[in-house]
Amino acid sequence: MADREWILLNPGPANTTPTVRAALVMPDLCHREPECFEMVRRCRDGLTRLAGAGNDWTAVLFAGSGTASVEAAICSAIPPGRAILVVDNGVYGDRMARIARAHGIPVETVRADMFTPIDPSAVDAALRARPEFSHVAVVHHETTTGLLNPVAEIADVAARHGRRVIVDAMSSLFGERLTITDDGIDFVMASANKCLQGIPGVSFVLCRRSAVDALADGSPRSVYLDLHNHYAQQERDNTPFTPAVQVLHALEQALAELEREGLDRRIARYADNARVLRDGMAGLGFEILVAEPGRSNILTTFRLLPGLAYDVLHDAMKRRGYIIYAGQGDIRTYAFRVSNMGTLTPADMKAVVHAFADSLHELGVTSVGARQK
Image 1 (cartoon, rainbow, N blue to C red):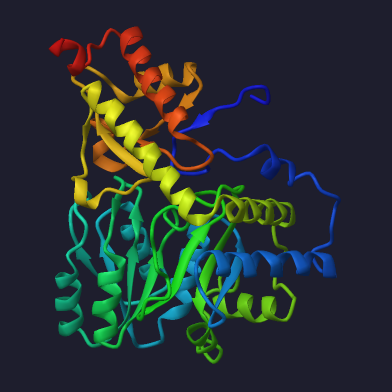
Image 2 (cartoon, rainbow, N blue to C red):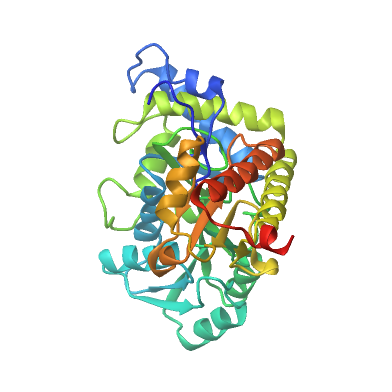
């Protein structure tokens, strides 16, 4: 395995640069020394700046996967006696609802199918009917299928009702357009190993300072995932628990590389990647399951061709050095996912399409495009 480099077409962890990986190899460093706290502060400042937020926002770091930061925000933000409205049109919206229930937080969902962005009017109706909701939680990019939810419109609805918004931007921050400072939004969660092109092991919550400051007098529902405790200690150049020191060093390098590439250029590169992939796969007869207006530029869910099973397609692609991803839930039986985040380029995506064509030939599956010739 150490000798093989895979092209990762799964939605995180994504392919990284050699310099990000090399940053993991650093001198051993005690997590309570000034050098470590200086690195933490540089990472926090870089995240906030590159996300387009000003001094009234901050970043709070967690050692853990993306779900750690999602759970930290949800279990910390909802006051006692209040409830949360969760947008559920995929696995990750459902996960936020499960997190709320696990912490004893009253929760209601507003739903759409996993191929359809939520209608903001459904959020509006739910908020009108239930004054006990303090927050709305929404996944920006549902990697269940690759759809984008209309976060700006939902935040506008919530703000008009005097409610606050928690955004899971795990696989969209730094890869899709997202204005985190929109009125109504208080917390935005993401992780190092998605569009940031860092290493798994660190996630973070971008917080409106007034919102995280307001948590100071609350009773924490979690010891490890107490958002305010992490924030307060990081503000004082301290930490409640041992951070992932080497992964933070790689995160700092990934932030430097994002700054060099430029956020606009990274977003444009991902969009070009998606276009090349989708055009090429359409030529092979693969159907995209999310309609055009709701598609992200980061992940595409394709319907399997007749007579083609996912497992054999996965293995054929892996023999060629490419890792594709199964569908989640019931769609696994008829669809699969291809992501184009990370260091990939449009030229790489052309090679991906060629690998799919070769795999179909190896498996004896005739593409629709070939049948039409």
